[in-house]
Length: 369
Image 1 (tube, rainbow, N blue to C red):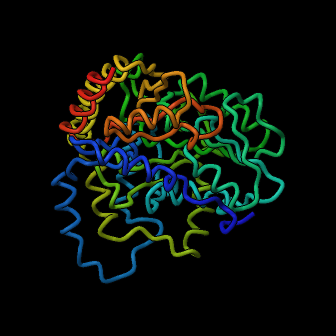
Image 2: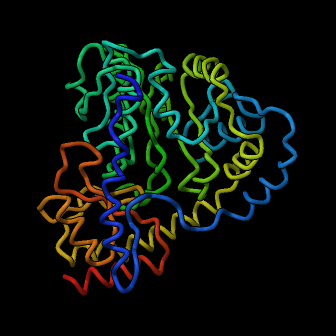
């Protein structure tokens, strides 16, 4: 199977419901796609302008300033010390890395790529592009022999599940026992809401409490799209095992996967400024505090969702029925079936709408309860 054999893009199925929601007298409250709506921080925009005289080709490896900023950020915000330029690599957003990682690691036919049961669809897409076998499994004991790559996602998209240190350590131990690489998608790590994650740092796969004394076989994937409102910049990076990063760099050079030079400069500036991240997190916290009780009042149960950018909700019936009910209120969500066959009664509700639209959605939910 190759890329030409993939199904149509799933979100096309939602367009009739989008049109239905648009017809609401109060207009559309789009809570479907997690695309930021808040301004890109001024400090980052200014940095982009400063670097627009980008007449030379950028480097695939990233500028020394960017690589140092990534390593420093991991130490300061994730508790991962000791990373150097050899451990980090910028990417053109995180989705391209997720889709291409099996190819870049030499995974192919006969190999297994494991991903979560509630999963960002691109994990499976990347496996199918190289004709590997995708397997949805959360329990490390269920990972089959022949597994070459394991994706974990914490906090999870769509379900907001956080894997603690003990759970991540079990992932690492099992992966090393069967000779698999672990790629940990950690793009929502700054957005902890409930339980210990309200006050504690969400652990990284590279955390020494998880990885032990070696980062061998481990990769952490991160994006600035959400915490810095840089989705349009395509600003992300991968860090971890020096040997794997070197292989990724070599292969990415051949493919010409070079983040634009102005974006690299803006990324370095964004990674060095924590104030705007804290401010953005509080915006999302406030929106969640408005939306979650309104959904519960309307008869939805919120599962997991202790961190991240979404509420994973169910009212105990088909996701498409819930989608229709919400569309009649002028609200567009994401059906759980887009994230695997295991959650046919869930919908994903995004916090990425303006304060006004979140408040309007909450009002409609309460009025329609």
